[in-house]
Length: 99
Image (cartoon, rainbow, N blue to C red; front, side):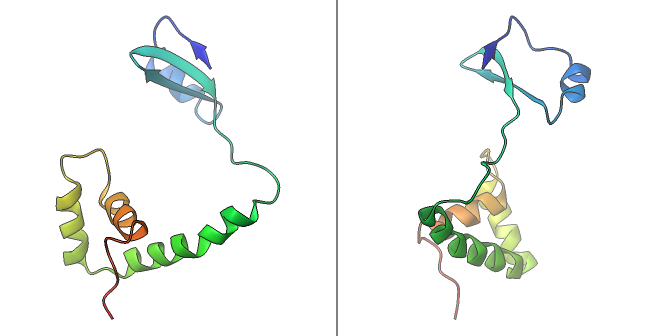
């Protein structure tokens, strides 16, 4: 991470997309190397979590437009998307699929 005096212009930020991540942390402009997924095989504990995320994604894709609209309303006024709210609720056990 590098602390900057000020964030560069949007055109400069766009030019480094995928290479440098510009952000503000506690009011301080910063830059860092673009985050990369870890290489190599994932641990068994990480792999054990994949099925629940797969199931949550499948359930989101099966929601009716009305249900998705309800999640949009739930997410309004937050920094989360409707899908984020649904996934969080499902993964925490607060939402269960209808039979």
